[in-house]
Length: 298
Image (tube, helix red, strand yellow):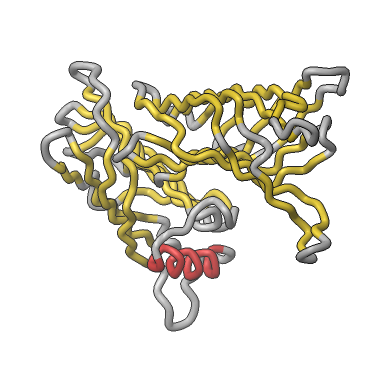
């Protein structure tokens, strides 16, 4: 997903190094299978003693991974609302190879600072996730600020006789800004039967976000969008066209970080202009019900 997000240069270099040696789990001649990268991540934090959901905040987490030995080390940090706390789960973690460029992380034995640690690093998609509970009473889930879902189904319905359709594996991305508690919402690879369009992306900005015990609630109305769909543009020679004529009338999504699943319900309007009066009107409305998870499997 090239449009999903851009990581720091160090992360990109690490991805190239690790993916290139993952096929054989062999560092190669003269090389090293161990790399270290520090990544700025978004922390969702719940006080397990009081049930309070703390304000999400960005901190830096450091990962050292050995793709030949299948081990890792983590230094994790999060904000408890007052200070930034740092924990080191264990001297050595397991880094189980699951597929090219993808490693699941877990505790080897016990840890004095955290429990219930799980996570992964996906160098193909440029994605990381760490989930753990601290001995001081906080449940923390660290993600990149771009929370996305690749394995999805979307049921599309229309306000006329157009036949409903199901879209498999449309991509949903929520880029969360913890300072403003808003999200840039992007729906990608969506098929619209009524309009006979394949939308490469439909993007809405500054959609309100609320942190919940499970993750994030995203909801907005009358959301302006920028939509890119496949069509030949004779004026530019491009194979796509860009328009703002497809706003979200409503958009609601529940993101569960614990289960890495989501549900979304939204309406997509097509706004047209009356050539006689100059007024705009809703030409048609599509209603969508979507659900899915980050990956189809690990």
